[in-house]
Length: 67
Image (cartoon, rainbow, N blue to C red; front, side, top):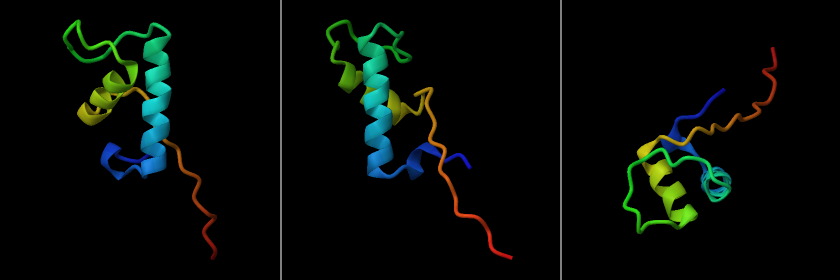
């Protein structure tokens, strides 16, 4: 089951932004247009998350259905 970007918990959101910030800090291309003065990877990752362009997803484990 995949989750829409606006249905993430605060923990999932923090994990996604942190992982994306690490990718940006390690040289991954930024997926949004920004000014050259904006170089903080965490802020860039937050902006990407808010625009919905972060290439990461959350896969939640659901309990088995009892019949």
